[in-house]
Image (cartoon, rainbow, N blue to C red; front, side):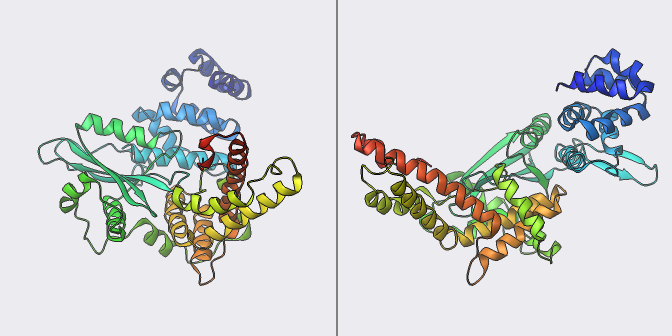
Length: 397
């Protein structure tokens, strides 16, 4: 359903506001102009209750203007359905992340909308993206440039591969605002705002754990001494969130986290290509037979063998790595108001970090997804090998 169609429904159900809603013809900016302050709240609240996607679309436009941001900030989550509350939390967080820092002004009892610091003020802010499906993530530091404007430090981090890439950009203040808007509005892996010290602590941890076989990017070696990564009192995101959630997740919260995996919002974080090839190579030799794909029994045996190998990898080689990813993911969920997911991530990480690692529901689902993909790849490679295709030896996942 389009925004215009949703607003027409709102007009039908709110006749007192219909004469103002309809002339806007679905234009969010025009709607902000013609509606009275209380009517703006009623319309946005109705959308959050009945049409979540359109509520987000409307709010993103309204957040561009101070009056609109104030409307979004004034909406109470009380009485909203679960999805509406989640959408509202995301919108408020996005507003903070892009420099529209929506805060409560207790004296005036109405929302106050902040902006990026003025030209003569310093900038120091961090941003964290979620892990991508392979386990890497982008983190950012935005700092004032002594010669004017700002410097943006971008690092690609991986708990398995260390600091994979590092870039430094110089930008004017207007460009910084556009940058913040971009990284916090992405369709997938949208970043959240955090303290600059938190990002420094995370980069510093990855740098300390980097092995001799993992070369630092040239730009990182050049800038490392200027990043102040040695501040001992700074805590990583995982250290912060673990202190906030001392109790384990419920079974229902663990089940909800499985839904996040299935939706592609978490995991599956498979082994690195070299490890995958080591895992698959003996299975490829074992099942290199014309029977594969022709007889169901052979396919079932291959499927079982692949899933056993993947599960063993997740509970051994990948256990510590994915436990750390889960802890870092818990911080993102926490900051977005999704405390159940945060607790479930921490509990799942504890299962992996024990003396006898357990996958738990979420990591079991990750292993299943990777196992299913490998079964398809292996079956295809065996089929191609029969046809004489040299590419059949590659693992595609």
